[in-house]
Length: 359
Figure 1 (cartoon, rainbow, N blue to C red):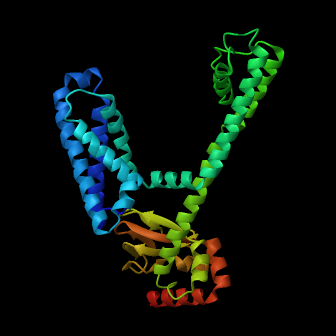
Figure 2: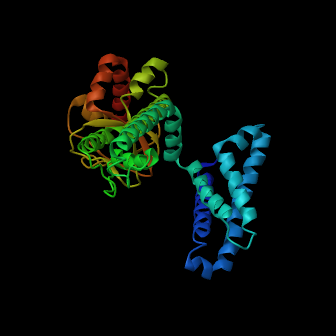
Figure 3: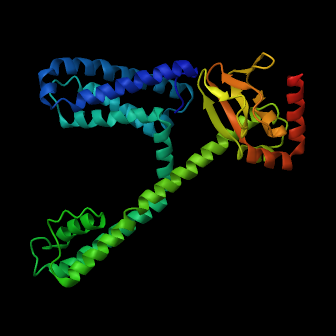
């Protein structure tokens, strides 16, 4: 679901208000059964009314927006819509003066509302959805191995070790603890074959339980690479010197560039340093200064810096400082050489701009 507020600065403020409200409301719910929660019960209930009331208002606003966009059903059946509904139900339950399991459970679940504002959690959700078949396959293998070990250990140990292996279900507890390499030690095989099987289970468990983690890590890497590529492609297309290029060429350049961000007053380039990259300014302003001729100019979005050191193979000829927070695309020396080798006309454009700027 798209955010209610389109303006970036206003959305940031609204986002932090909802995050703070959700976090505090869930904490108050979770602390109800503690000694402190019982002591300050009346105050806790009062703030729960206010905080969950804010979440209800947020839910109403999203419902209104969904109705306007003719996407009410989509929103109500989405993850965000379900969590918003749970938070609204919790608000109603806060008017019940006594604490109950349903209110506590729904109040804790409401904490998931924060996931809407977290890019990392959104990526995590996408990775799980994309890798669901692989994850289910690994889960099936884990369950199969658990049942297999439990059954064998039950037949081997049931007579000599009835305390820990009196049934297949009892043996499953040992199997899971062993495969997970936890091994509590409260139940261990006694027979020789049982000990050998237990040792093998520990070794197999190292790889078996690491399999889902590997799937998730690989999924994360692929998703982040996809996001980085899409972001870089869009940003490269906005650079004036690349704007006229075809989509295939932009795609090639997008794979070469890295997004870099600099805070206000941070030194981007220092005069006299060895030049190892050049930068294309996407957002913000930088000040270019040079001591020998008192050079002092301001460059902004669409300009590029650091090209002279790469073209002439010399040290940096000026110092560049970010005047405000800047977002740039970095092109390293290695990729610069590849670019001008394949696309010499881009080098000509960079040289023309650089020469005119020097004049």
